[in-house]
Image 1 (cartoon, rainbow, N blue to C red):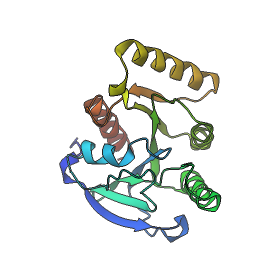
Image 2 (cartoon, rainbow, N blue to C red):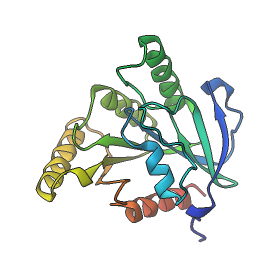
Image 3 (cartoon, rainbow, N blue to C red):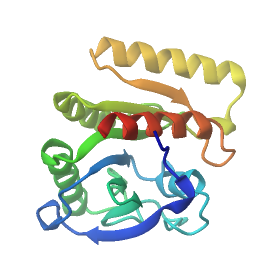
Length: 201
């Protein structure tokens, strides 16, 4: 079975609303997370491209549903970050609504990668999104990102706490300590994405 070529990713298309998405074949993995958890950096590092996904010093710069294509039948979807406090309430609610729609009704969706800042742990909105994904019965990968900012003892402690929290919510998820900046856990994540791709064929 041929594995994915992570260096072959290319930007495909952007959408402002879920109802406008006109790509309805193949399979895809969605990338979600609270604003400023490092989604854009993850895409650039994962696919070894410096500017495939825009990285900004301003949280929440992704304001569209961005489709990235790895091959003709497999995609990575970068959804806007949710919850940044400096956004207007109307703007935040709009994107939370669109993300929920995508997660619930997107038939091509086979897995979700959710980024959580290991320093701040799960936010209420993260848990709400996890409950929505749980209903779909698809693969959930939780990345405890920015782990380069804490020592090994705290990494282990945060990982154990995350496992306990997810188990207490009766959510089945794959959790790993991660760092986009230092590329901690990149190979492991690629293997998981490859497995999802192979199982979708």
